[in-house]
Image 1 (cartoon, rainbow, N blue to C red):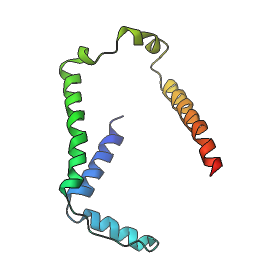
Image 2 (spheres, rainbow, N blue to C red; image 1 turned 90 degrees about the horizontal axis):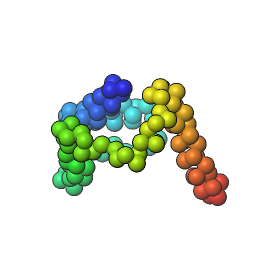
Image 3 (cartoon, rainbow, N blue to C red; image 1 turned 90 degrees about the vertical axis):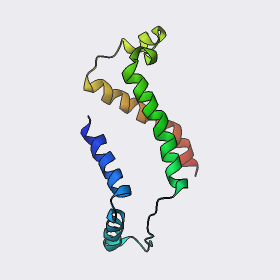
Length: 115
């Protein structure tokens, strides 16, 4: 469960931090046939970094609170009926993912068919 997020995090850090990595990826995409897209170099700007820091700071703070004071973020007693039916098996997660995806698809289908 942690391998996929770790690989994605490492890849995103490599794209942004390692000098020349983004250029190498862009060059490989160009060679593969980017369909006429033009490569532009990537630069760090305060306007680009600020939203990332603004979203990472509350996430880190919330994670720190969850680790140091878990009862503070515990689900209230009224959430207990939602937790009872869970069997903690993989099939349940797959079923609920399917239900959510189906519901999302049903809600967006009228917009797709209307366009």
